[in-house]
Image 1 (cartoon, rainbow over the protein chains, first blue to last red):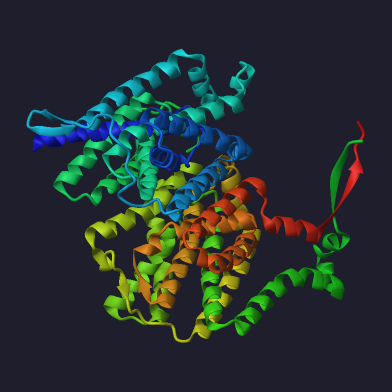
Image 2 (image 1 turned 30 degrees about the vertical axis):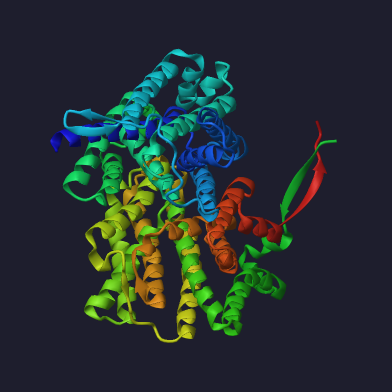
Length: 290
Length: 334
């Protein structure tokens, strides 16, 4: 019982981390609020499903195509909507949230609801760890989580594009003087983040059905992890996802599954009240804003 | 040759800003028309409307109140993404008082207005020092959380809600109360924003550090603004509870947060009249689109995005400019 809780708590934490990484690339690291993230996440699932079932493509074409299309759509959202309200934080949030709402509700309207909307797992098998059954997909998720988190860390610390992502969040004007085209880099960052989210969707969605309502939950979870961990800190995201992930599984085991979502919400509230810059946040600007 | 648009205040506006406006009928009409015409129009609409559309007008008035409350909060530097919190708290207070204690609407609505305002202010007191997007996130999360707590603990009727609450009497009476109160709120708060007190609230939103360094405790004023806005929202919730004779989890739904914000985005923020105009466009429109079902939310979201990006100033500012100023193209010397 305890062993199973620990294993599933670990896996749930990695899932949260995967979901939050993409959101953190845009919101935390580059300071661009992309509240359409949950919608883009779900859109990847539906696109891959359409590629597999409506067009009859093999998985190795449909999945990368879905990721590419999602990243492209995110770049378009930046170029045609976010760019025009850049700097007006509230308008950024309202506009992107509106886009996300439109995408999600369009899918609901078109009737993409039901049990047939599932993605195939990478490997259809299950493994015994100790005395707990764990299916191979969950192990793949853990592997993908480790690889993607490590790649993000190296990318934002050792490549010029990655450093530019962080630079525009710290000070746009200084970034400009150093020859960084802020608009272009921000567009790349939004696309990159959406791509990360799309990869996470391809890994996680095979665990259940693709549901519209999941889009809102994904956004809340990603927000929770980013805020609790602190904006712009990859370590913070990992720590926060483990905190919230284990808390969720523990409440699900010892209370009810109804309370799982409440845990993320309470975590956001508590951190915002006590330490608004997050556990590992090191953006001074944020503290000045408060 | 390069040109630019020049905007000059109309002479009549310049003159009528003074007490001398009282010397001419034309100038008095210029001042009164934008205020009297909407009031008369709404009451006339209420007279000629069918019972169904009269109900729609009541709903519209309540959404207008929510939008006014949003704008009031925004003028004091607090951006809310969760008007549903105020609406829902007011609705649940009125509903439970009516259902469990059997109080009549004449008592439950005032109690819910003041009590809901106080409760929401207390709930948000710890996060008053947050600004911008962080305050917005807290307000977005709170109604979602309350909804889940009600679902999980099954208090106040749980997912079923409480139905069979008492009504306020006839639809005409409801409409009359709603219409009068929406204009009381509109003109009252507009007047308040014109006083020194309102200036202080605006100062907090423009530059709270400057207000602090002038020796004002901004948190006291923020809490007061929050209480006023929350009371208005709670009133709308309590009123709708009795109009529908039902209270349940949907009162915390995203609709009550999104539609006021969309109204503000369409109407234009900072004037209180803009948000009201916005909701009088959007809510009847959404009623006309009812046949489209789920597509309604999509259209709403698209309008929201188009207005925030394409018409950031809002319809009211545009109309006010046309009314008060004339514009012409003039050449620019290089």
